[in-house]
Image 1 (tube, rainbow, N blue to C red):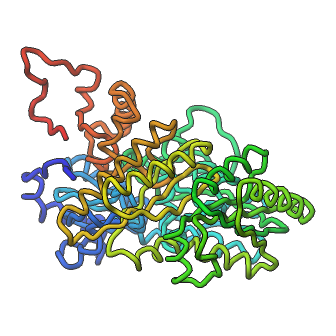
Image 2: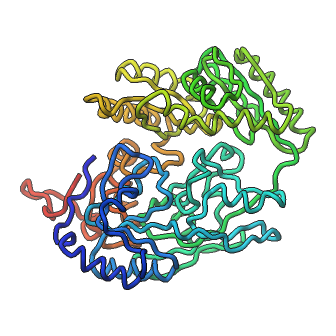
Image 3: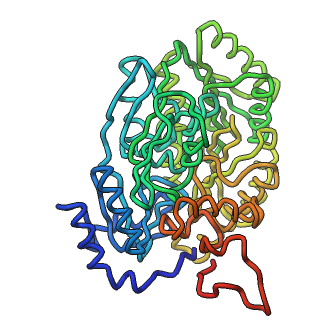
Length: 495
């Protein structure tokens, strides 16, 4: 994976830069020792590693502002980092860059039940917000599988989703406001506890911006009251294609479950070995469909889902009869990623999204791709909204397997776009999908997106090398042409 060539002149100023950062963040807030920086050399896409030049761990918004202002004046690159659970390499450090960790921003600042809002620092975990309000009957809806560890700031960077995003939306649908620090060190606020704001939708722009536009230092999120009734239906099918057809039929019938997840046989057995949730081992695919709301509505919808499942070839149907049983159904799905890690030395978790009606087609294609690349794949995904998470199994110690796994992943994502979908649903682009952006966007599209980046970060210092497949200087955008076989600005790295 090619990244921008490190600037040796910046690396040569490492001690000077570290001293300046220590003046801003005293004590143990600046890390330069190699062994101490190892923990920051990768995120959840652990196939790629790079030691940062320096790690800085601020504790206040003003410190973040001072760090960014200094880095701009000194022409030093900055990579923001949350909990490091991201799966697209978005927090991969740079050899000539400062890694800005937000782990010390770990306090909930305000719980406002009247406005159904929580104000929190970005280092608070996703699940930590729900834990803070659950005794009063509330919760925070987006729930990624890594919710016990992932930070709310990282969720904003990647626009994370989760099991219940089908009905309650992604992060962008549940964030009300942010405090945001620009590369100039300017502290800005967008949104708040109010539901709507006039003017440009900067809040929507920042959510999912992957650390390319600035650093979020405070977040206001929407909390919801827990539904009075929630029950889960466990449905087994002989084949993944039949399960996919059932998903489309449920949504087509106008039913929007609280969550609808799918696992294929390798994932089912891995999860069952790990959690012992009582999953049927002999089915080709398993759907978990959760219905929530008033009890009478839930009972009616369960009957509807049962009829649709039977019409689509379901071989087994179980309905949760208690809260413990519902949680057990979900326990296997929530633990599927670590469970699959027990059956393969390595895996890459992909993240593409397709129209729901294309689920049977993409599953058929993935089966053929598995044979083509001679690698196994386990499927665990948010079936209700068409967000796929194929887990490509490989052994990095075997020559060529990582490269085959990457090629397999590229084929899956390209197929998603061909079927009318997109390259990512919630994990972001990062470095993983960066070089596939051309499969979805034209050069004009990409240039326009980069102009937005230039409006916030004209020197390209924030998280460079991520998202965009070709690096431009802002002055170059819109003026690219070739004369006498020579590209303009030949000194600019292109990758």
